[in-house]
Image (spheres, rainbow, N blue to C red):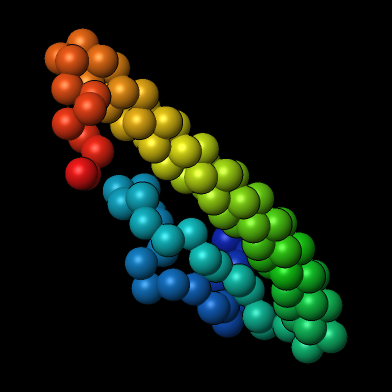
Length: 105
């Protein structure tokens, strides 16, 4: 190893689009030479999986609440539309004096 650069010659995993001083792309970089430990990686993956599962559960709950309020809003909107339609028809018929013509004889 070089004393000026302690990472010189060490093996690593990294994205080929790793960001450098010119590009701002992917930032994945992990040294594996001497520090690679399968148990630590499993623990890291298990922690990440637990975090993702928790986030997934939270998002499912939010989706369920959103669907509930969407149904309530739809029912309320259609009810208001029906009431306005009926009241508008009654108002128009009273104003034009043709209320008796609406009934079939």
